[in-house]
Length: 149
Image (cartoon, rainbow, N blue to C red; front, side, top):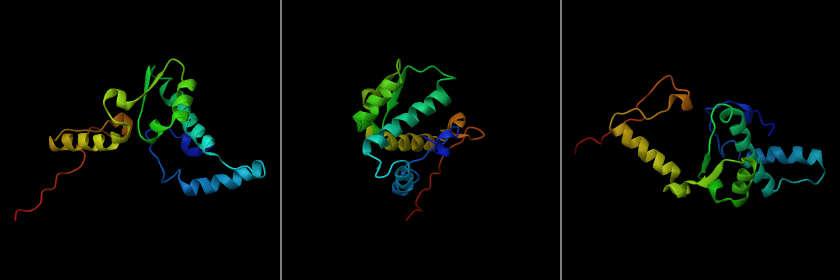
């Protein structure tokens, strides 16, 4: 939780490219200096994931906006420990899977790209400047047709 990335204000995005195997190799030696023989368990990693979500919500979202639901998708949606920890740490906020709203947890990215393509095809902006940091609305992507045969 001391990683500087977690303290950065949104918009931001990360994944395995930052918090992957190389990051774990960095953590293991520091964990060993705290207590000889200490290793990072799967439960600790899962707890860190849930804690980072709760921390980000507490610092960046909840002071500005009251929310009643947290919709979870992606790989973490299949993890009962993460879901339980989110529910326990966010009293009064319903934690629910995106599939309850008709969007399979593993289809979020495919659905998002299909929506972006649809909006681009119809020449409509599809970004949210307040979420992305963009200067204004923009049509995303480009339609490139194959040359006639």
